Image (cartoon, rainbow, N blue to C red):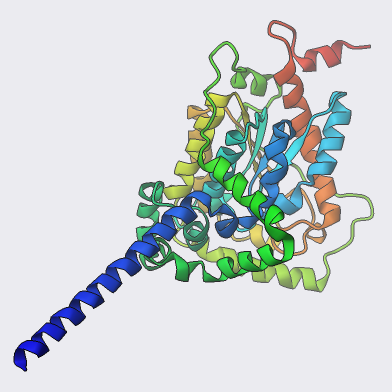
Length: 395
């Protein structure tokens, strides 16, 4: 009897251990599949943005990288029309900004655009003091959307710094639990759209999984970014844009002011004990290095912000922010323009998102001050006088 009991216990332990092992193997297999083909599950908004580029890589002459600030603040259709009119030939502006994005997300999107064959000549790169902060409040979003087994060494130091090791392990070791809601939504999408429409996103994900950044341009083919910025006057430090007061401007409504105060309160934790560095600055440096390899002119912009948001930036925060930007300027050829104070609060519906009217004004400003001059210099034949000199000599 005792021997039979021991055998049953031993068999029970074996079954339990095998069950746990098979469960973990299944979860690890799912995590590998989701890493490679799960972009529609992890970041469906990026798939929606990138699908047109898969068949028409020429759409990305100019790329806009950033967060919801850039997504709502720069209208790509209006920018394309306005820039093409300024230049005199078609120039496409492609928006690759993601809601709840920051510099690691911008790096992720730039890599995907290049992997699809896009060849941007200019990159608008959104920055702000909180974007360069050592603390990163979007780490949970990064774990859900971008962190894989392959890039974990890049993200792990920041994950540990932010005390987010638990969500990281859930995403890596229990993906069926961590992604249960997106997986259910994908099942619903399959039911609604049918197999052919549903598979488009996964074909794109598979194509991106097997693609790499194109080879760097050789020295003779690569434009001299420093000269381009010099001729456009963008090599003289961080340019602070002046305030614009559009005709018919009205005061901000009380609901806009309340939304700005609430939004500023959400940003404030990013700026406590402020210092620059960490994952975000490393991502920006990789973006700038990639732009250098691919002959892309990087234009860093601080988007318009409401006065409640700007009030969070103490003189010490601004000093540290500009010190880091100036350090980057010594290492990379780039242009920096600070538009945080360029529009009244009435053109933002909260602390950092432009209204449709504000978006059109800001888009026109970006095209006129940055994109058109830089594009002309970028396309200028080697040895010919700068476009600015040509325009001044014209009758």
